[in-house]
Length: 69
Image (cartoon, rainbow, N blue to C red):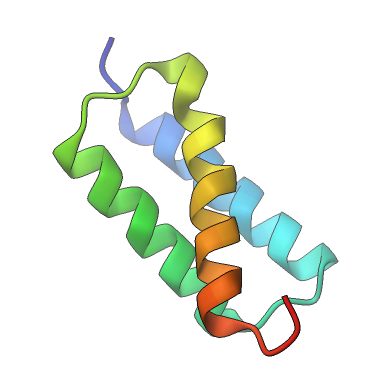
C-alpha cells in the first residue's frame, strides 16, 4: 500500500487547518510537514496509519516550536 501525493496533500491540509484552529505558529506547521515528509520517505506506511503520522508530527513539532504547547 503506497501513499500517493493526493493522500499527502490531504494530510498537509488537515495539519494546516488544525494548526490554524489551535493558533499555532507557522514554524510549527512547517516543521510538522517536514517531519511527515521525512517519515514517508523512510518508512512504508499504510494509508490507514497516515493520520496517526500526522498527529504525531504535529505533536512533536508543537512540543519543539511552541512556547506554550
